[in-house]
Amino acid sequence: MRARHHEIADDLRQQITTGRIKPGERLPSEAGLAVRYKVSTVTLRNALAVLQAEGLVEKIHGKGNFVRHRPRKTVYVGGWGILDPWTAGEAALRLTVRTTTVQAHGHLATLLKVPPDSPLAEFFCVSHEGASPHGLARIYTPPDLAPASAQAGNSPSRETATRFAVLSTMRTTVRETACARPPTPEEASVLRLRSSEPVLAITRIATDASGRVIEAALLAFPGNRVDAVFTAHHPTDERQTRE
Image 1 (cartoon, helix red, strand yellow):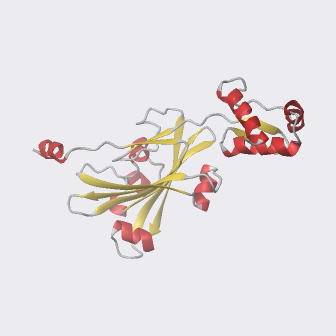
Image 2: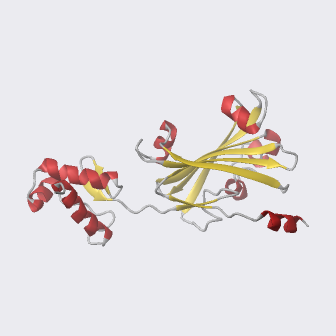
């Protein structure tokens, strides 16, 4: 026999998904819901915990339980990744970019194939819709390839942010590795995730025709807020394009 708190969660879920209880709306008090369903407050809280784990309900201390607004999904376009907004048509999203110079240690030196302690330009990018974060990225590139605006300490241009630092017209090869995993403490904090919520993590490496690594990007998106789109080209199509 199915546990009573799951039955209550099913009923509330149906009311939420059908619009009877709307996004942003406050649910009745826990005591009131317990009376309505003729259960103890412990059973009722277990039911709400199910919906909270699913991301349908958010408990705000001192205010009650509220139906969460359905998050807008980000579109990640493989090949040259995009944290929206402009090229993916998400005008409501905004992108903040912080630039700095760092030294290549350990994993970074390996990714960019540079000697340890080599200087790198770092772009720390976070996309938001209102106050809600949608994705973050740490982009690394050799200083001589960083946009002039970034090197001067100015705010990156719209094109810079969209393309994530690499603005060269040279032919490049892009290799991406994607996996689902728990968030790091930094990712959980920036993206406002629980440690149990997965992220889609993408490592993107771009090389030029000579084999030089011109960009390494470490991207992370909340697993329930992203659609990743990759387009594969047949080798013969690429040869024809070059001809």
